[in-house]
Amino acid sequence: MSKFLISAESIGKSFGKLQVLNKATFALAEGEFVAVTGKSGVGKSTLLGVLGTLDPAFTGKLIINGTNIAEASSPELAELRREFMGFIFQDFHLLPNLSAIDNILLPAVFSGTDTGKVRADAAAILSRLGLRNDNTPTKFLSRGERQRVASARALVNNPRVLMADEPTASLDQESEENLFDLLDSLRREKGFAIIAVLHSKKILSRADRVLELKEGVLHEKHA
Ligand SMILES: Nc1ncnc2c1ncn2[C@@H]1O[C@H](COP(=O)(O)OP(=O)(O)O)[C@@H](O)[C@H]1O
Ligand SMILES: [Mg+2]
Picture: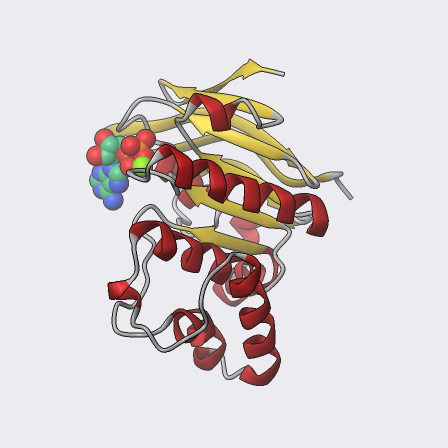
């Protein structure tokens, strides 16, 4: 068994003639915080999509929690995502007319899970993230609050890896730092790893490693 949660070797990914990833190699250890940077359009979201098993059409070798992704069935991948990963997307993907807690409970409702326990866990994580647990539709929340709802949803199933794609884009600096304070203290407490696409120098300086994606390859920026 590998000591890595995720091990990606020579990952390639093209859209038609556009080769976005080309021999991208990467490993994520338990509890580690890895930041990915790079210019707009360089392929950071594409990389996260592959590592998050949301995009099956790639080349190279990807092993997640001991599973060879190229050989896994789609129900196996769905289970891996549900049990092992949490996602914070760039535009959050919240349903605007549902409250914070209902957004968080939605995956459990769809998968037919008993929502009782999830409801208690969701309430706990919302309060931990400093959010009101009321009926306010998320469309009335500020961007910073919506981002914390998205974070709570990503963490409610106690993932081993939190993947976040520019979660702090267009937030003011204080909200950005507050969110990372929270995510980082939760990481230390619960032991999950973080892989996040980030730009802010201040937040980058907290990462264990910073990788720059350039011409389809990941380069280590500092240890
Ligand atoms: N589904 C897609 N079909 C075609 N081209 C795509 C698709 N997704 C992304 N691309 C292209 O791949 C490149 C990398 O995109 P992306 O991963 O979103 O970059 P980044 O997140 O670094 O800004 C861009 O040129 C983008 O236009
Ligand atoms: Mg992107």
